[in-house]
Amino acid sequence: MYFSYGEKETEYLKSRDKKLAAVIDTVGHVYRETDHDLFSSVAHQIVGQQISTKALNTIWGRMQEALGEVNAETISSADRDSLQSIGISYRKVDYIKDFAEKVLDGSFDLESIWEMSDAEAIAQLTSLRGVGVWTAEMILLFCMERPDILSFNDLAIRRGLRMVYHHREITREFFGKYRRRYSPYGSVASLYPLGCIRRSYSRNEGL
Image 1 (cartoon, rainbow, N blue to C red):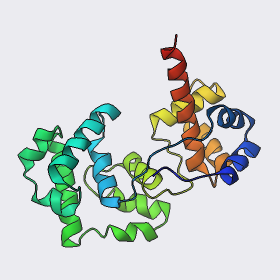
Image 2 (cartoon, helix red, strand yellow):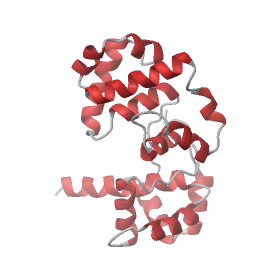
Image 3 (cartoon, rainbow, N blue to C red):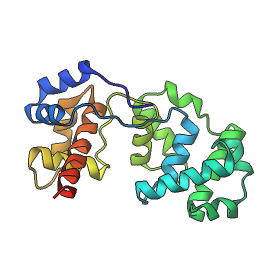
């Protein structure tokens, strides 16, 4: 499954910003995979912290093969050393096992996250060990598909904004301006600076 959006969102964003409009027209539709299983999404984001996408895909594939399904029961019953041998650091193993135990004993109500506001969901998710604001925002964006997530904590998004608007630096003040401009479709807008980066890399690789 891919992040769901269409002409309503892109036409609104194009009407709000000519430079972003040019990027949208150049890049076209962005197909960004999503995972609507909240438990596996949290685990996936924790495992993927500070490693490359390629490494994450390899480790996640091994994890799925070893566990069959990544859920609270399989994580809880998995041996700590066995999870580490897949390629997950012991620190991350402890984070995801602690998360699984909290879900199983009811101290963390995972399903209630769906009913919360963005701010409430981020606050609840960041109460988990190993989940910071950026990780929580990525869960809201690429699992829950919340429509207005534009993460200042995402370095790739800030880099994309620098490329689009030719800023030396994206300060919080600048970022707040773009966040307000793109609202209520900040999530879709966030896909396009990333698309701009990918397109730049593709051009460079072709030289």
